Length: 476
Image 1 (cartoon, one colour):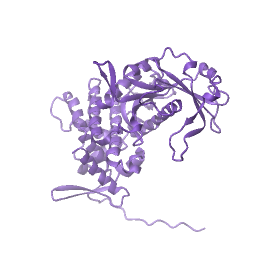
Image 2 (tube, one colour):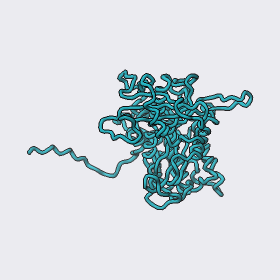
Image 3 (cartoon, helix red, strand yellow):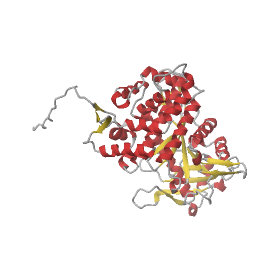
Image 4 (tube, helix red, strand yellow):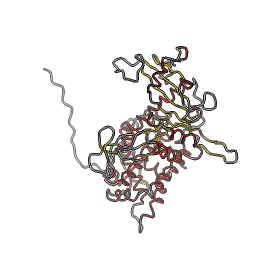
């Protein structure tokens, strides 16, 4: 039997000089500085110090967020930046970072969120925001969903979850950003593991936090002189956990449209067969590049007049969808005559500005795109959300804010630095770390300058260097 040729061995030694890895995280650190996030967080936490500090709290907090973006899942991860002092300068130790998290208590947490909102406004003004004149942003979509974060030890407010695990049940809101194939983390509410999935009060709290996180020009505004709402249209999307009367009413009171998954119960099953075949329209699908407009084996119909929606806000509409299950799928008790039936509730009018083309099929497609929030949560879990490392409740709340900050820094960096490089702007976080954040470089000094020389053999070396230039030019 012929043996495979052994690869040539290289001589290994630990005497490299001036070489650094993780050079790309400098983009995120500069983003945090240019958007004013460092100074804003420092101002929020300044009153928690009795004297001068060696490491500004804003720098410590944003460095932790950068470390989380770089793959850290515990406070000790900030050492990755500290090991690169020649590139990043002095970085706080793990105990110092922990103390900053502890200072972000319930009194200072709203200030952290306000600091993040101000940073978002500056980032959008520099080019990281969506183009509100484009058709895809006629309305900004706020996607709500909760997730389980498992805890492997006793932590404050950790509890048994509905999935028979133990940990926490945070509720999150992401701004859908299809232009960069990612979302911005607008708001997150840390909750005990036994928190309910359809708790209206929590959804309303996160809705208010999400609206406040948007720049002023990107949210509804009430004109007291005319008694009308003006400004950007917003849409709150949620699965059936958000389909509560209180949450729907809160959306209307804030001039936010809603699109909720609606439970398929006996009432829905009873009216499916009553809808004439002529009223079922082919379901639409997203553009897959093959020119196909309709989704094979799926139909949509409006059933607003066939069910009592009197307890829901005026103008609420019920839209049903039936689809042939894919081969091998198991039918459930909610299926009707072999068809998988789902329902959505929305208050988007049939006619008017911002209405999705296609009416009922278009509105159903718009709601189906809420599924992208699962990708956002999966990405967030790969960016620090999988683990809440602290024992105290307020420290884990601050950790959650650091995770949301990391998600935002990545989204803004992709938009400003790599909007014209599809393989960098639209890649997931694992690929983004490999291609950009973990790039190797060499530090040289001369002519009173410190130069970061990206590895010339790296496939994306030129794009990363140009990304630094675009970032600095965007904020000049």
